[in-house]
Image (cartoon, rainbow, N blue to C red):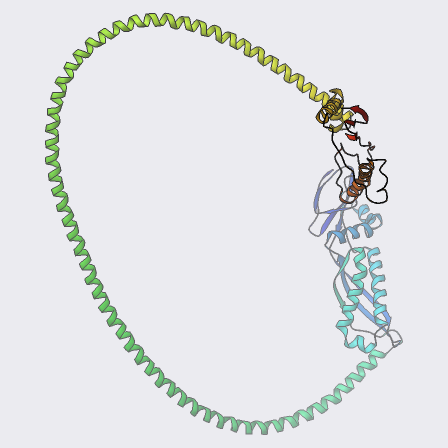
Length: 503
C-alpha cells in the first residue's frame, strides 16, 4: 500500500479490487488488494531489412527504420497494457531489480517480433501490387501506403508509428538490377551532359547577340519614357503650386474670420458680464432696503408685544385667583364623589373578577371538549382511511356509509314521496316492425336501456371516458344491472326499485 507516482515517460497500470478492468493513471493510491506495474511510452527504433518481390517478379531488398511506441491515449494504453505486457515481458526486469518496480519498456523482444511480422506482411502486400518503376519513382506514395497499412494493424495493440524512414532499394543476392540501372543512368547522364554543354554554348552566343539588341531598345525606350515623365512631373508641380496658393488664401481667410468672430464673442461676453454686474448691484440695493424696512417692522412688533405681555400678565393674575378658588371647591366635591365611586368600582371589580373566573373555567372546559372531539374525529378519520383501503377506495367507503346510514332507503322513500299522487298520463307511440304490438307499453323504454351498455362500452374503448359509477361499472368491475326508479304501470300505479306500490 502506498502513493505511487510514475515518471514523465511512463504510466501506472492498476488492477484488483475497485477496478473493473485496467486503470491507467500517472499517480494514485495503491491498496493492499490491488496490483500495479509501470509501462513506458518511450518509442524505440526498429530496423528491418525486408526481402520483397514486385509485380514483375523482381526481387529486391528494402531496408527501413521505424520509430514505434505506445500511443499516448488511455484506450490505446489499455490495449497495450493488456496485450503486450505481463510476466513474460517483465520477468527479466523483476529478477534484475527485485526491490524496485521499473517501467515496462516497449522494446521487448516479443513486441519486436509482432511489429516485424506486421511490417513484413503489409509491405509485401503493397509491393506485390506495384512495379519496380512505381516503387522507385513514387517513393513518398509507397512510404505513405506502408505507414497507413502498418498503423491500421498496430492500432489493435495500442502502438503508434512516430516515424518511418525507407532507405535506398538494394539488390538481393544473385540480382544486379539496381547495378545495371545505375550504370544506365550514369551513361545517360554523361551523354546528356555533352549535349547540354553544346546546347548551352549555342544558347550563350545567341543570347549575347539578343541581349545587345535588347539593350539598345531598352535605352531608347527609357529615354522616351524619361522625357514623358519629366513633362508629367512639371505639370504636376504647376498643379501643386496652384493648389498650395489656393490653400494659403483659404487659410488666411479662415484666420481673419476667426479673429473677427473672437472679437465679437469677447464683446458679447463683456456685455453679458456687465449686465450681471448691474443685476447684482440692483439686487443688493433691493436687499438693503428690504432689511431697513424689516428692522423698523421688527421694532414696532416688539414694542406691541411688550404692551400685550403686560396686559396679559395682569389679566392672568386675576384669572389665577378665580381659578384657585374654583379648584378648591371642585376638589372638595371631587373627594366626596371619589369616595362613592371607589366603593362602586371595588364592587364592580369583584363582580368582574368572579365573571372572568367563571368564563375562564367555562372556556377551558369547552376547549377540552373541543379537543377531545377533534381527537375523536382524528381517530375516526384514521379508521375511515383504514376502512377505505379495505373496501377498495373512497367509493367503497362511501357506499358502506350510505348502507350504514340507510341512505339508499331514505333516497327511495324521498323519490317515492316526490312522485306519490302524480297520476301521470304517458302516451307511447311505437313505430317500426312492432308498431302493431301494443301489449307491452314499456318495450321502447326497455329497448333504449338495453342499448346503453354497448354504447357506453364503445365510448370507453374509443375515448377512455367511463360513465359514472352509479350508472354502470366499466372494465374489470362486475357490472350491476341498472335499477329502474319508476316505471308507470297504469293510472295511479307505479314500480319503485323493482317493487309494486299503489299511490
